[in-house]
Amino acid sequence: MTLGSRPDKGPDTVIEATGVSHRFGPDAAFPLVLDDVSLTVCRGEFVILTGPSGAGKTTLLTILGALRRPQSGVVRVLEQSLATADDRERQRVRQRIGFVFQDHHLFDELTARETLLLAMDLHPGRYGPAERAAKPREWLRELGIQDRENARPHQMSTGQRQRVAIARALVNDPELILADEPTASLDAESAGIALDCLKQAALSGGSAVVMISHDPRHHVLADRVIEMRDGRVWKA
Ligand SMILES: Nc1ncnc2c1ncn2[C@@H]1O[C@H](COP(=O)(O)OP(=O)(O)O)[C@@H](O)[C@H]1O
Ligand SMILES: [Mg+2]
Image 1 (cartoon, rainbow, N blue to C red):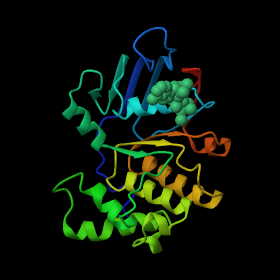
Image 2: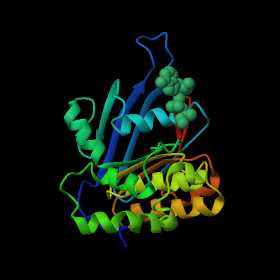
Image 3: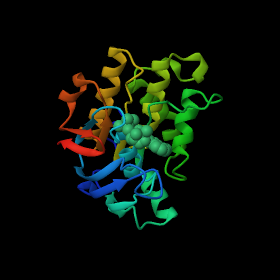
């Protein structure tokens, strides 16, 4: 089994964000979408971010994932300060993160197996032929879609596509997993499988998981549920 194969290494504090504010515009005429948000997440933690639509959850996740530059505040992710990092350093941080977006963002031409191999190619020299042969299959099995190995997105159900996207996020044993409503398109059974995989990654792989979810049934899985409203941390 591939889950938890990542060597037990890396920093204990995976995310350390202090006083993060953000607005989509150049000046104070634009509203604060994030207003003085602080958050610490440690290795092995499964944190759920919840709150109403428009609260700033996705914006926060993209800042933590080095997909958007913080405008103010201090953001340290995997021991890298994201505000001061150059493009190369930010890219290196992103390589250590597994992303799952609301929309699966799979490529039409690629089979499930090829999708996972493309993700593995982001780490040149890391995998030998045996791992390239075995790992995609193992992860697709973990997600319960081993029989879809050679299927392309248009041949899969919405739920199967999203499970490929989750397998792609996990295949490189990331130290941090950032997931934006990853199970919104899944039926209850598929959602259960996907959440088990994310939870296992946190528990046995020593990763940290930050997942956005509105579904109160998921909240019992989390070590911590953080509620956001109007760009602020409401309850943590
Ligand atoms: N790229 C953008 N440009 C302008 N406004 C945006 C952009 N992305 C999000 N917003 C606005 O920022 C606010 C927070 O959005 P978002 O972070 O997506 O919230 P959530 O994920 O909690 O629903 C919303 O008012 C949204 O309309
Ligand atoms: Mg969102």
